[in-house]
Image 1 (cartoon, one colour):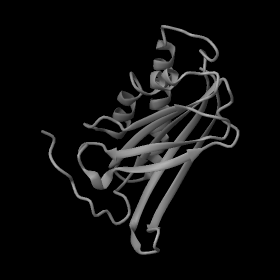
Image 2: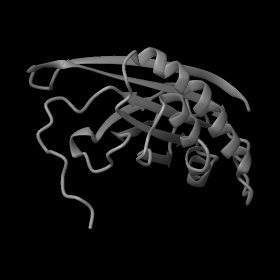
Image 3: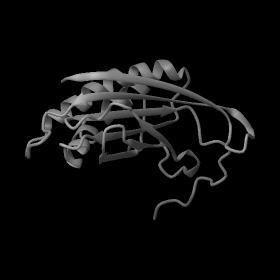
Image 4: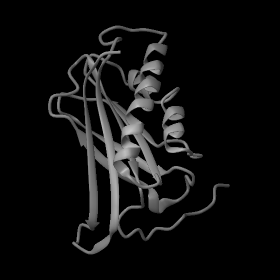
Length: 181
């Protein structure tokens, strides 16, 4: 695994877009810029990306838990694949093996981790979805963080993103929503 760099961000939200105060909501995110071993080539066996996802899930999430400093309520993941890669490379990094070490680091998580992956340009943005770790139908916890790295992804890289939050959106008013049929 070749990681060019990692970036950690912590934001504490104390008011909504209309400047109405709220109880503080903390969101933390880790971004790892990794070399895509399959950039520019078709490969049927993408399992090396599964392993990279698992390794980064374990190492990055522990740092995020420490940064958050409160119980994890929401989580999510995203991958921005450079132009020589395929969307499936992002899926391979995120889906088969990343969730288990994230759940182990946060001590729980019954819901699937919301995710997003796409192919994008250098300095492109990716929306990292957040959702409640145990209650997938809690609409108040569905949130998004828009992320980017100015010098990534290069054509042969993937930006892996993992996010955690200790609360809902600011002033949520949607509710839990209907139960699934």
